[in-house]
Each structure stands twice: as C-alpha cells, then as structure tokens.
Length: 178
Image 1 (tube, rainbow, N blue to C red):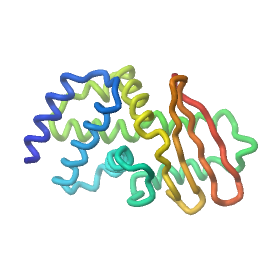
Image 2 (spheres, rainbow, N blue to C red; image 1 turned 90 degrees about the horizontal axis):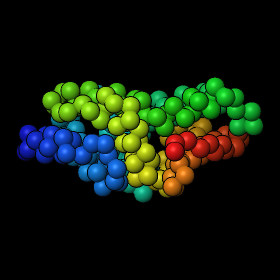
Image 3 (tube, rainbow, N blue to C red; image 1 turned 90 degrees about the vertical axis):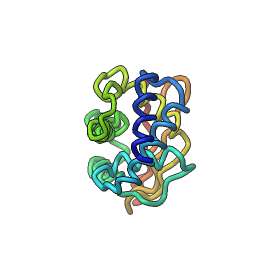
Image 4 (cartoon, rainbow, N blue to C red; image 1 turned 30 degrees about the horizontal axis):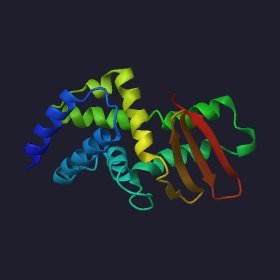
C-alpha cells in the first residue's frame, strides 16, 4: 500500500509543478501524511505538523513540529512595541518555511520522489504562497505557554501573520508574500 502511495505521488509531482491550487497542496500533504503513518518515522516532525495543520480548522494538539519554531519566535521578541527589522525578518523566516523545505527534501529523497518542488526557489515560493492560502484562518493555539496564538490570514494581496503572546506582551501582525 505504501508503495502505491509513493507511486501516485511520483506521478502527481511530475505533473503538478509549480503548484497553483490549494487542492494540489492539500493532496500532496495528505498523501505524505499517509506515508509518514506507514513509516512511523519521527524524523519529520515539522513536515508532519504541516500535514496535520493543513486539514484542521485549528491546531491545538500534537505540537512537536512547531514547539522549536514558536520558542525561537518567543525568545526573539521581548516586546511587540519595538520589533526591530532583524526580528521582523526572523519572524517572517518561519513563513518562508525553510525547515519544512529541508524535511520535505529529505522525505522526497528517501522515497525517490522528484525534488523540483524543493530545489527551485520559484517552485518553492509558489508552493508556500498556496500553502499559506490553505492555512489561512486556521490558527495554531497555545503552541507554547508564552504564545497564545499564531495565525496566517491570506488574501489576493499577500498574507499576514499574527502572533499573540499570552504573557502580557500583546500581539504583533506583519505582512509577507506577494
């Protein structure tokens, strides 16, 4: 059964590049999630997190893949009133999804799947744009004790990320994309 899924993904990836529709991203992540379940491989925490997040209206369980990322954001922002350009860039780095890209590349390599999605910056950028549309208005709730919410809101002009700190720092919203 796993080999059949890998074969379907191989054909799908060869046919759909770059990604342009939400259904393509959701299909890819659902099929990857099936393979991860077969493998019971814990080396893909970030990939598994995004697979799960893409099909839930909100994410408030099984946070292993986001805890490190949320902790980095938490340590970076001491106050939302004075976010520096460097802090802004580091927060937006999460939404370039470089850790997801690394794990996806390793996953594709492990299963002998085409790497075009991960290798080309324009392919990756298209994928991230569509993925942020999929994840729009599907908040991550309480990923760590000091962050109450992380949410992406996507529209035709780009996307915004809101981070609501649960420890008195307030919240910050920043735009990215298009």
